[in-house]
Image 1 (cartoon, rainbow, N blue to C red):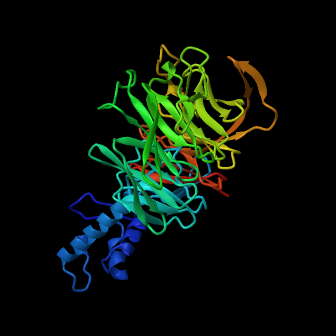
Image 2: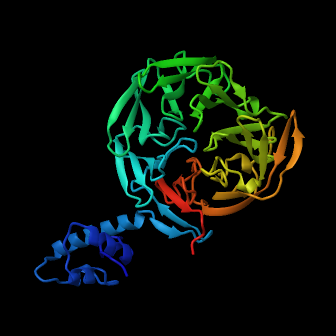
Image 3: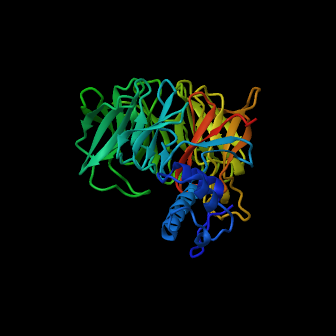
Length: 457
């Protein structure tokens, strides 16, 4: 059934129109709502008590507008017809985003997570899905790889704001909203994250003016660590490389993971370092031309560093890991159509997920130096679940290292064929591994969603 005004091309479905009508501040009798939602009844022939025609038309237009708004709103709870998995929308405002995939968004208790909304940083109750704005007016846009992280020990969210040529780091308690300024840095730095016991906050900054030499040119950069109690910053590891993706071990308070940013095939990207040290440790050494490794992240127990590996770029795809202490290496082959911009691992380390890739991705191109787009497209636009297959992996020597080759069983969870991958989905597991949270514009506006790992019954 339709709402229609003869002089305007306005119409809406009655189901959502009635829902919008029930939520509107206008009191409408059952008789009026019945007449308004009659199919193809011109409004000018309807008479309702003492209501004038102009009042009636105005009422109809208000209801139609409300109904159209309801029609434009993305669904909140549905079963993906392509996968059979349940998806829920966690955000309420268009323009919301989950945190970058390696930034911890969850409380230690696993009951809440932080997302960015136009109204500010908000806590999502993972049981009730209620939202509570914790940091109003936060500057976090959801486009970067740093700037916000939830502490793994307390129930505080740490974040930074820019003030002229300086960066100011704050902490806000997720429940009480008590806020304190931790430090006003004497430089404009990029806050990367908070360490395991929440005594240090780390990041990187440019020593010189400006942003350095672009993706290829030299820079002058340093890492920094801020004492969470005193606010006193210290700097270490001076480098001419572009230092980025600074993140802390979830369990080791002094271990930091970072990357050399730029053209991945021209650099060794994945590094760890101790806070205050000038001795970084390379976690993956390239063994062939155009090999790339990146989008690195810690396992939740801090024992492994995982990353996207391609040997070479756009030809063979792997999810690779190196044990932080022993140097043991394992890698899992990834089918081209299942390659993902980012991978993530559950808190218990048993399963992985990936967020797929768009038509401009490495999965849809031939290897360098040709780099020709594939036709038909070979990329896959899905949220994927990966389960390691049982059995002892094959062991072989690659370069100077012995590497185990495991196998993964894959499953599609979310159809992202309508998603624009200029927005990276950045999937993460909830602490109980029952849901995977991601950001998407598959319905137009950017929102935060969660897909249930178990198939709907």
